[in-house]
Image 1 (tube, one colour):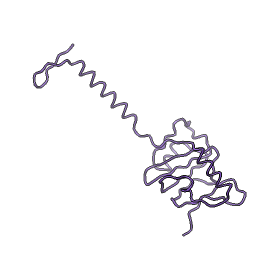
Image 2 (spheres, rainbow, N blue to C red):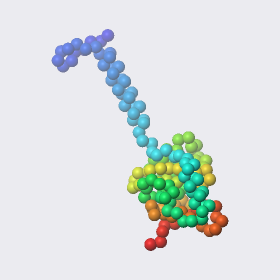
Image 3 (tube, rainbow, N blue to C red):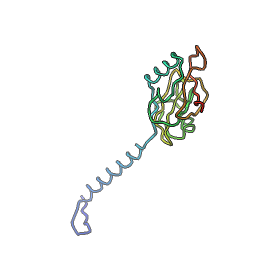
Image 4 (tube, rainbow, N blue to C red):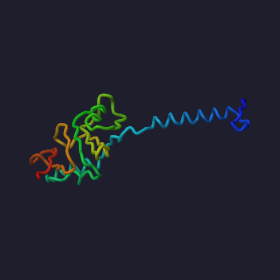
Length: 159
């Protein structure tokens, strides 16, 4: 056991102090590794069902009415997407943990963003939109492209 003296001359045991410092250092390293890795990519069966209903109804609907949330930009990423590609397109981190290095194995991803903050990232197995990559504002409307179409298109409303 090592004894040390404090500035006031008091004798203290050095080993418990070393242990405390080691424990605090370990905790700092662990917490640093728990930094925000972005919004987690999720599947949302309820949202998918609502979008399928819009297709069946054949009416134009503001996308915000279907998705809910407080967003001002939506990113449409059809097909398989890698995490690097998604993050490059949306300008922020999206945690695609569990997705292989070659991309998601789903039909596409929708990312909702407010300012510079990503609100949600949703993956769809059966992608509801007929679109290439696209970015739209909060007033975007979802509608069938034509009668009988099985996918939605997004369009900005006419002013």
